[in-house]
Length: 436
Image 1 (cartoon, helix red, strand yellow):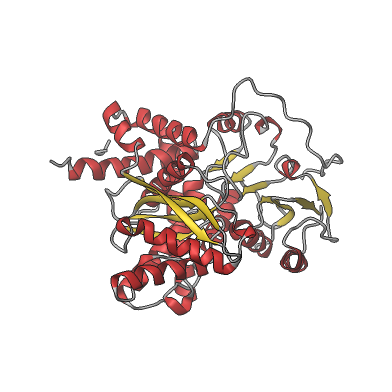
Image 2 (tube, rainbow, N blue to C red):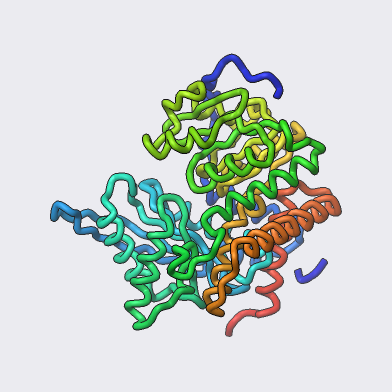
């Protein structure tokens, strides 16, 4: 050891979930449980486990907003830097009314493992503001972003911590962060964020990178299980940044995507959805519900459809002890962060279902963020074909490493990915030593 289709169901509503004797675990509980399992496999001590489970730095800030009507609202913002041993912190910024510090801690930890697994020189970070961006004007969101940026200014920078878009934020948000930071230091700093507009130094392919990465890994997983992609069936939970493009890319690859969902509900068509028409409907209405080219479907029921491939690409904790036994997909590829609880993982393993973990499956976003950071630092930009080639090469390389590591040590893909990532981070810790 180193230093480390069946035919679709006729019932399209979900049966009531069996009440659980105990509350569902939180994302932070899940993240810590995964780390503990990896530490046990590697044989590390309690001290190193404590070090790796604790964020290196975290900040909670008040974010006041002057509303368009003159009133004032107050929000809470967070930025957590989980680990800095392999390089500056890297992670998204989400705007959601349900954001909590513990959620951000969990996401930052997963980001550390993700960066280590695909071998980019970053540690993990994450940020969030407790705001529902759908309820505020663009001018109000700009003011929130600029105030949040100014509050966390001391701990971010192109060599310290580089934010990126996440749930509820986009390239415009990143442009506001870049401008706020640049105004404060007195010169333009393209490397302060990734996921920027291309005209401001963003990278080709960044907006769809996570979805393309999910697609590359999903196709590799199908091949691994001997399932032809042409005619295979899939369901995608989530129709946002990741889910929308993943559904389109999977369709382009010959997979029949029969169902997608968003926070309002789901739609189903056994013959496959027409994403040109569905995307136009969503652009006009803001939701998949009501689309006339498919049947309405309960959102939770989508997770239980008898498909070859399930892509949970929405939020954490959607596959858990209460529903895992009813999930019949042969392969689950995690487009979201933390969608599967450890209890659900055990059920899927017992049923012979292949789960590709988030830190591998959705790593395309941070990989192309790394490409963007490199391009910005050298002021030389690659074309879209170069970015896509590098993305595919690195994602499939990471997939092969995880598959081989899992086979050599008789581990699940999640366990193998986590152990491999933790080993790399721990090695960096041990080589650098403690100061003083």
